[in-house]
Image: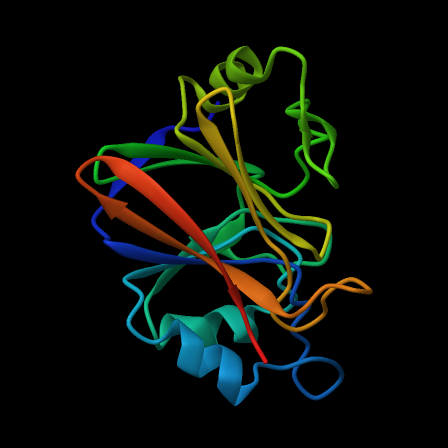
Length: 183
């Protein structure tokens, strides 16, 4: 069960499924890096690839996250589950919500039958938002008062999806998620 990490941020960028492999695969585009400017925190949800990709993001804002299947070991993203508190809003972070018992389906997202209880068990208490990945498709919806937000992939979107990431704004103890589509 993850400990709650209390962070100060107003605008959070959420990325996943980018598979950064400089020199041998995808690397950050100017459009992605420009879109991230002004964020106070970048949360990655796995399958980010090599640590060099995280290093580049760290030039924009603090980076932390969870591990997926295609991640070079890095202390910033080593946990499988992470619980964050930002401005009084609790966020649970996971790569694959189905494997973690939080969803019946990851896409389209279908919460586990006991969704609020499953979240509380996994993250050591209730959460206001579940940040998840593994589908390369962006999605954002509210289930039983909890936002489920998948940023999609800014570099390798699934067929039919557009490159995207999520932007979270926390104001007055409320979470406002937005899917940002890149051109």
